[in-house]
Amino acid sequence: MKLVALAMIAVARVAAADVTADLAAGAGDDTAARDGYATATASVGARLDRAEAPLAARAIDARDPDTGSAECCVWLLTGLDPDERLGAGAQASGEVRTSPAGTTAVATGDAWLRAYGWGVTVGGDAQPVGGLRDRFWRSGRDVVDWHTTFDVAPMWALGTDTTQVMVIPASITVGHRAAELAGAWQDAGWDRAVDTTLVRVQRRRSTLDLGAFHYAEWGVASAHAGAVEYGTSATTFDVDAFDGTWKLDGARVTLHARFGLASRLPVGAYVETGSSEATSGPEADAADYWVELARRGDDGATQVSVGAGSWARLDPTGLAADTGQLATASLARRVGGVELTGQLATGRLRRGAVSAYAPASVAPVGTTMWLGRAEVAARWHAARRLELDGTAYVERSDRDDPRWLTAADGRVDMHAGLDVAAHWRARR
Image (cartoon, rainbow, N blue to C red; front, side):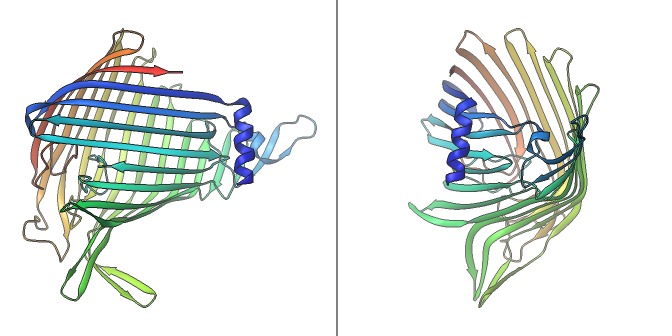
């Protein structure tokens, strides 16, 4: 604690404070609320941080005694992100939708502290909202969760101030979910995740991870089938042989590519014997690959990206796993005081594994599904602190979004909606 206090004192002497607030009111309509709804949103954020010292200054280095240049550097237990910031911050946001049919609300928030490549983030969600790129499509409806992530700096690294080779940067996440059922809160499982990279090669305009591992156990409510307990978690495991990002053409073009193996293990039998525990069940394995190209216009007013590759998920019940292919595209353009954005994600999934405890309503192995989402939005800076925006979307999926006033029933279905809102924004 003394070291943390000293770090915060050092930050406060030279750091910049940033406080933001956003209040909005609007209206919308979607296929789950045909009478329309009114919306109210609010968000606030604050941070106190400063830029870290240059990479060479963070190192235990060997320098040429005549020129003072860094011929070789050694870093121990410190971050090597050139844009690393030292400090602390917090943010929170929430949205309420109400109509004659009912009211729903979502909220999220987190607080973070970072110093020298180490960090901790503590966050929570009321009815967490998911997306099509999630590894597990579980619903956040009537769920409250909290989670803590610890960022671990590389154990050591070698290189110069332009090229670094680092070993085992990692992050560890622990979380818990509680669900409201029949008017009472019940345990809905623990989340545990570890993300680590064996070797990372970093240059000024490229980063290459060799041997990246992403392991997660996703908490679900446990249940019993006779004498056998099943549940507690579903598992995802991704291993990337390489995962690289390169900035080309004067950093106007960014190329991202990865290749590896993805495994999805639905909820299975859970057996605890003495001090040991084990789970068993089917799994779906597939190649994990992705290529994405993004380009920023010379004037910075236009950004476009396209990507394609593999797709793997656990279905909303956690009792089935699907693999397939996905394509994405996005466009952002600023025209005067108007910002226009568009996003598209569409692909095909094939059911690869079904838990032995799945009910008959869960589609069998071999079932194929075409899923996707398209969204367009416009934002107009009407005045210094006033913005008007509108968003329209159409989605075909089997996921449940807790912002929808009517819960999804687990079948692949079409959802569409339109929102307009006025925002008052402040920053100091």
